[in-house]
Image 1 (tube, rainbow, N blue to C red):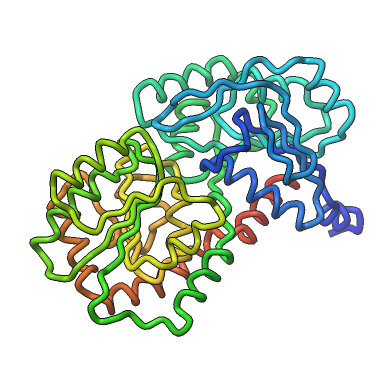
Image 2 (image 1 turned 90 degrees about the vertical axis):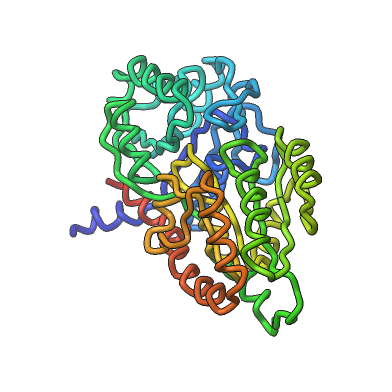
Length: 384
């Protein structure tokens, strides 16, 4: 390698992380942007966040380029940007000489599309594709965007997809050829919580097994499937359990009504869980159940649970979660099969040694997605 090439390979970069949604909510794409951005800044790169309406002030160089509307898409809530004024976009791109614009995909022509179309010729444009379709509308909507944006997509130097299934859908919908790099997770923060939980911890003989669910209370996340499986599992094991449901959503009233009707004792709905409290909640679980039934391109929450839990992580057998759980397939379950789900729960509820063995395996698996590993892979794409 020449001296010039070596200097280029280590030179700090100016990176614009582009997201059509707000960064005020801790959803999956937002976590990707914030985790990657913090890591890049820690490595000496200069990071700008190009978003729609964002009011948080804990990150420097936050640029809210457009207002947004809140709606539901692919089983999630997200913000759709209103048209970004050209003057604001052009002023930012004139002021900042970006080495890389990193666009989160699929993207709107009203914000990210306007940034891409006005990017300087010397700026590399990189994308990360995040979704798998949960509904036919999502599938056809992504295909429609791909047709509209086909010419602009030629401006991208490289597209990343967060999993092999997401890469296949990106190729189908957008006609691109992605490289697969998973979502970055601050694994150390979660393993630290696990270590603190296990330090001197001894389970009481008569203590109930603690089952934790964490996620939006919407159909595809599977909280209802979990409660039905717990109700069935009561007849398969005599070990007492307590269930903690973390998260809010439109199904909460329905789920609470089911708990009352089924006579399920020991179920607690704790509502929204702050990001600062998440690691401790997962660390204190004997069983973490994340039984999503579909629409997952990856599983950030699964990686966090694998790193944090003192016990076993059981996940829904969908393509995105299967990617994360590679090597741990015996902990996947079709959550819509209540009998199979109940049997898997009963197996681990009744076997503390199996839970401990699973926890030890899981930490190593989570390390594949640590931000130090993923971040370095992303920077390689930037420099290439």
